[in-house]
Length: 565
Image (tube, rainbow, N blue to C red; front, side, top):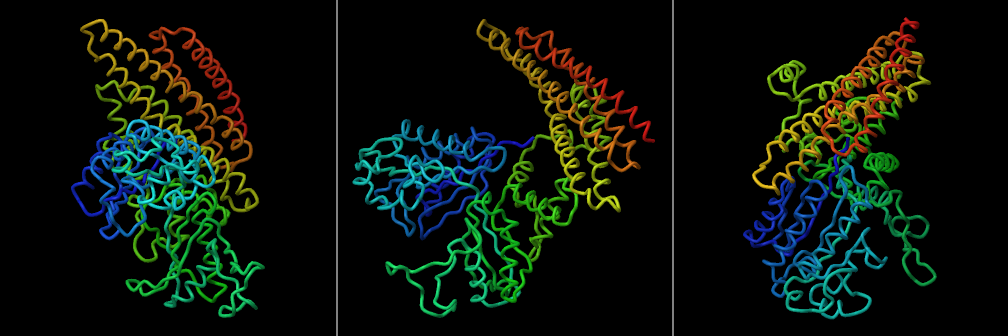
């Protein structure tokens, strides 16, 4: 189950006073659950880029607090630096990382903009995907005239702020204007070439970058530039959209590189850029020896790349996440210049490692059994049911992978790879439910521990108990629904998979039914406490339906397994 994560990368118009920068980052870190990833001040630009990540609600709150702090501490009337700027919080992009869409980020950005305008009295332009009009999509256009031209600019009809005041009052004179928006994740990647020639590296960069190069007469690299009928230079587009690139020589490594910014990884994924740079380099007698990713990336960059190269090799993609990432690293030579450590480069892994809450699935099998056997009531039957179901899914994935790689079945690899991936996705979802069931039980215990000294506390306690108990029902109910999906996958594998592994598919069926029966008991035992009988009855009816169908499916499929053996 993919966690909802967004990134925020605000740029503040202060890069010299460390105390001000620290107060701004303290405001970010004051929101629980938000991880401050990077702080990059620049003295000459008098500007600091701050990067933080977390769940949407927390990140938007952290952004608001940071913008408020910056407006309090930074006076734009006295600000000077080499970088263009228009406000104390000059620009604030919201970026999807995982589990959210660009449309979601547009909504988050506009919500933040409205709050900044109304509560802080700071005028706001919404830019990029959050822009209300095409001319405001471009950041440079929104920032044109910079702070010095702001007083006149916001009074015009064309450049009236999207949110906040449109008059240049004392507050605005101090804070300036903020440009807030939503954009996709920008990936900076350098491609290593087996040459020391900057000119040749630049030639490859020009071949692939979206802007391309100036078109010259006769196709020459040095001939006169071609002009259109209006006398304007004609540019020949490169092969990769949403990509900016240059060539340079890196003295530290003693090689030339194509240095690229991919501004939209949905339009041009990193692995597609790697293959295209490789092709362009080969056409010029060069070779890409590897690559290096600068900064942090979302996990999907490596997962998408790994699956892409596995499919090119006619191999199943229904394998572990770590194996998929290893294929991505090796295929793109990300460890060419130095070791590539996913735990230090992937945003989701960094957040996971900083989260100190221990997970049941991080325990060894023995430790999980010992923890279950302890006097603590959690983990209990709900977590164990989800775990049994996850084992059933892993067995189905194994059978699919063995079938995908079976000698003589080369024409079937893609079919079984699809089922391996489906089983692996169910395994991940069920694994998540192992911990979630214990979390749900602990919420019930916490609700019962709430104070009940007066009528208000008693009312709040009763409400909390009902909400926690309902959640403790919904999790095992979700386990039932998810585990039931295994039967469809198992049936295909029993009928068409590697006959030598049919018993493994059969055990997967038994695991699914066992998990469903166990999860049902957890639904049933908690349901008596729910006051909303209409709601709980609908869950009970569907649970009993799944339970009956599960018993039927087990009998039917196990009979088929025994017939095959």
